[in-house]
Length: 144
Image (cartoon, rainbow, N blue to C red):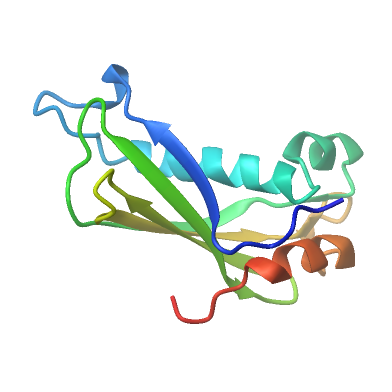
């Protein structure tokens, strides 16, 4: 059973010591790790945990594109609220948008990832399964 839609999906983290550079700011690549962690939690929340998808081995959802923009630093001990929304839902791919907000509510960074449904046996794109499509659709935001 899927949770009631409440776009965007939210995940909160505190910035740990190992993620900051000598200036005390989050090293840029960690934003992608935070986004992926949010994606994993989101997929579980909508009833499609990644470990189940991998175990069934019918289709996979590889990441084929990632980009980010950095607006204001996050520092050691800061809390960030990550807002995940569905930016685009295509026939065989979907784009997720991530907004990272600081404890003050100000945007700190944005990221976008594109995932393609891949038929594991054939090794080529396939239609996103209907059940997954239905679970993603309520999180669609067109004004990103």
